[in-house]
Image (cartoon, rainbow, N blue to C red; front, side, top):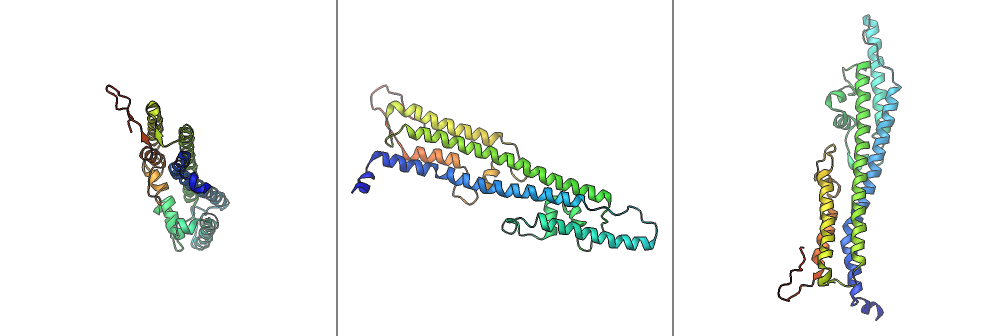
Length: 259
C-alpha cells in the first residue's frame, strides 16, 4: 500500500515530471560523451599517421637516366605502399571506423584530403612521392588533426550548455512540491523557463560553424537518432506542458503566465 499511496503524493508527480523533463538532457550527455571519445580517437589517429608519414623519405625530383627512373619508380611504389600501410594502421584501425565510415582506404582519404591527394595513394598511381607531394600530404594530415581539435572544442561548449540547463531546471523543480504552480509563483516560474530557452537559443545562434555543420545542423547531427533535435528546448517545452498555472479570476488581475 505504501508504494500505491506514494503515487498519489503530489511530490511523486513532481519527481516523475523532473525525470521526464531531464531525460533528453541525460540522453544528450551520453551522446556527447560518445562523440567526444570518437573524435579524440580520430585526432590521435591522424596525428599518428602524420608522424609515420614524416619518416618516409621522398623520391628524388629529377632522375638522370632510364635505369635510375626505373629504380625510382620501384622506390616510389614502395613509398606509396608505406603511406597506405601507415594510413591503414592508424586511421583505418580506429575501433569505430567500420560502424561510422565503412569506406575503402582511397575513399576515406579522398573524403578527408581531397581526390587529387588521394590519387597519389592509388595502387597503380602515376603520381610520384616527391617532396612536394609529401609536403601537401603532411599539410592535409595536420589539417585533419586541427579540424578534430576544433570540433572537440565545439562539443565541449555543447556539454557546458547542456549542464548549465540541467542545473537551472533542477533548481526550478527544487522549489516545487506540486505540479500546480500558484499564482504568486507563475511569473518567476515562467521567467526562469524563458531564461533557459533564450540562453540556449543564443548558444545555438552564436555557435561558430564547424566542418559539415551549420548552427542548427550540429544538433541535427548529434541527436539524429532521437525524436527531438534540441534537448534543452525539448526539456523546457515538456515542463510548460506538464505543469498547471493557477490564474486569478479576480477583476483587474494581470498576473498570468507567458508559456
